[in-house]
Image (cartoon, rainbow, N blue to C red; front, side, top):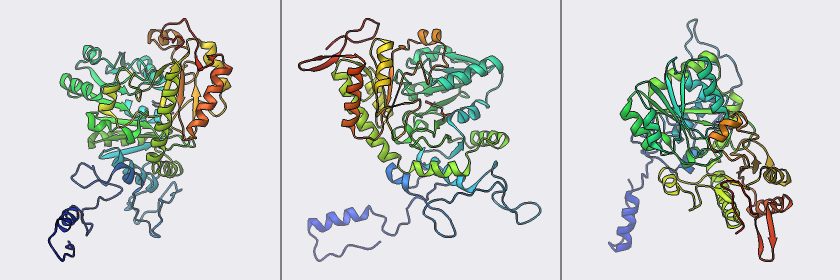
Length: 446
Ligand code: PLP
């Protein structure tokens, strides 16, 4: 390494030599990218915002983004094959590039990319056999609930829905039959926090073969790495923050156990659900801007959560100190995310707010650059029947806000107008306040 040019031995020179000693001036210690193996392998890592955009390809023209290998087949060098790729269902260079990049940012040895988040869960749950038991939450994404119900009704899988925010409830149903413990945090739309490390610990203690699976869609690798918290498998809907523009459907799975990775790759190859080359390209492009999008989205979300709370609404958001599991959330995550929910106390009022909003698009999903508003009980969670929703204490009037990257004052203005038009707030000389409501959990005028 070059030594600093010094004409003296003063404190400034000593400080400079110390700073330079930390630098790998020759670049011998630079991490490869995409990482061929786990970032835990002792290599130096850049900060996540850097790793997200930093890629290398072996492209013959040095293209700065991976080309789309829009080809179903690849010619071979001999009658017995000989090339790395032969058929896109089994593997495609664009998908491989994406998968290596995802493995790097998800702190995994292997990542797999498939056609949707539900496709990812389908691949994972094909590891189950009849008689296996799955323990999962009582505030699950509706599609996850639907797939698990299908497995229960048709495949002989036993599914226990418990309050996974209480480790003891999970412990009570854990046994040697438990094959999977499936967690989401924050839950959606109730925004409850699940203690991933504690549940992983107790699950592995009681049954070392039980797989702890985490749906990390709500936080993304930008804010949480469940594999580092004791999970065995992490999956995400790439349709959300990872791609960020609601222009593709995608799902990703990440693991550290190579055997588990091989088993899931087998299913992907056997069923043909691997992500298409074109969508792999788009997901790769989206991932590069994850840090900047997520930072802006959660800054906006924090302002909006504070705005609603200050006007007397019951707001659920882990960025608010009033969140009952604030400390737990910040012990496992690096940010609060950009999804929040609030209650008005009246289903009709909630409907009017949603319909009066202009900037906020009425849409299921989240993680997009545009802000979205929805009533989960009517939309994303409608596949959970009304009785079950009631048992799980899901307020029918709950409104979910998925915050985008727009100017936050515009978003607040639009929401204020919708609240006033819907009659959700009472105008007074000193501003406006949430109206009294008479259902459980609702708010009264501030
Ligand atoms: N997990 C969560 C938390 C979701 O919200 C969703 C979709 O909304 C999914 C999984 C399923 O993802 P996809 O729609 O990409 O199949």
